[in-house]
Image (cartoon, rainbow, N blue to C red; front, side, top):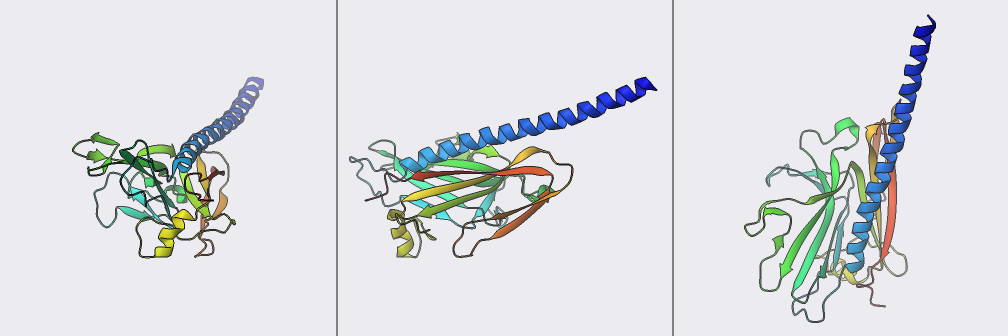
Length: 258
């Protein structure tokens, strides 16, 4: 009897320790993954808009964001279901020169692993943050960098920056701290195009979830995005995963005129 009680106590203690250890490991992974992702995004943001003085092509495309954009679905060709409404997830794009003859466009957006399991565990846990790079050499057609066959542009796909993303938000503000709702490369609104040169700072909000379930009971998380036109679009997630939002901001030194 004493042996059975001792074994049960050891098993119970081990189970608690194992779950606590897994929780600490998952949170550490989330923190490390977010730091790496935000560092990469901040580096691109600080380069955004840079135009080499010897570059003799247009530098009108500086920076862009889309509120309530669509998340791409991986491994599907272009058709009506390639993009999935991400309940408020954003899209970020920017351009800068890497040489007097080369300019790149960088895109950040969420990608879903598959079409049939987009709402797994009621929390969009199949999404990851992707980074896409497009080279724009003078006199040549733009080419995506991440392809199995670069010259024929075959099997091109963005690279994964961080997995298990629940939300990705981008906020642009002018020098007075006012949020800019429309900023784009090619759009019908001239004001939205001109807003590219009004962007002073960029704020990035990245919400990650733990790789494994941590809590014993379901927890509800409410995420509100930063679309000024919608007055905040809310999504409610209920599951046993831990979620945490990481934040970073950047001064756009190559775009700000004064």
